[in-house]
Length: 47
Image (cartoon, rainbow, N blue to C red; front, side):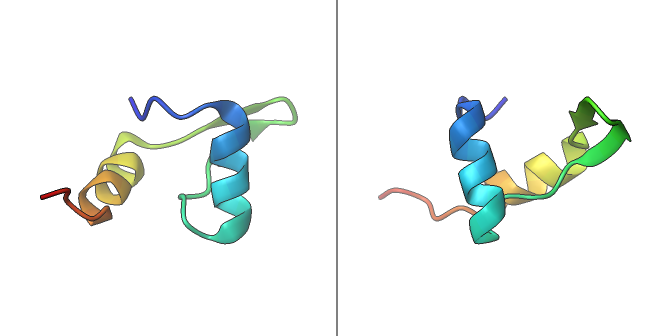
């Protein structure tokens, strides 16, 4: 949905510029569609 790689997502999470996931188990995390959509709409629009 974002076309970002895993490393980029975790780097942005550490910087506070990407939403945190929900932890489903020790080895499984997922993001809600709502949180990703909100993040996408908050990005600046290229002119």
